[in-house]
Length: 319
Image (cartoon, rainbow, N blue to C red; front, side, top):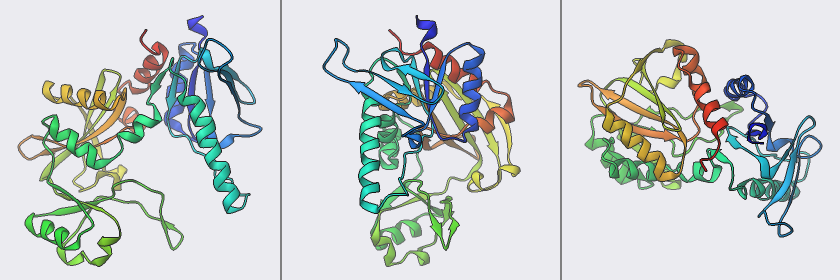
């Protein structure tokens, strides 16, 4: 029966945001199977069979406490799963084993075409390329800061000199440690004098600074939109969450339609957008995080974000 169809939640062991959504699903009486790919082995077993029944794929995912029939999955909440690293194996064996899990377990899950995905990981990946994001934003008529992606130091210096203020942003967040200390890639100011030949090693993203008075984080869940204005006085508000203040705002109708069209282009049902508000109240598109954090915003504003996710996952795929 549809009411008994479970929701698969793929995420890391410590994920308070997923906990909020699971609590809402529990209140609705919706069964939940939570798992993390890193638990493959005794704590996570998967079996799938192909070509032996009318269904394209049949099988099960089992954890120590639960089991789910793959043909009876209502929806999949792909939050922040961790893939196994197999640190106890040699380098080559670990690389081989990790690939088998990614393309075995991952491939089985990706083969499911019945459930609603929030979001499908392959679509998350496609939407996570900043140059593609910027181009789509322009095609949709959104205002985008002047941006350069290059590994040419001379071109980078020329771009920086041509604009009043410029920041450097990473093209992709990546875990990084320097001298054993975790380093976070903030949006940081850069001058032409700081650009040297090391820029040639890899493409860099340089962007003109918006003369902003605030930021807006927009969470879209299905067709629901939650917009929160963030006052910080900082170039990058993520540097100090304790200094932030929040207010719930409404977006202009053309902006709402553009953001929904943006997600539709990538086949996403949810995403977190970052916008900047300039001194005249204009909205500038900055970026999309297909699987961004939002739990602290619900706690700070009271917006029913986790309930919106739970409702979307409960509904599952539209027939």
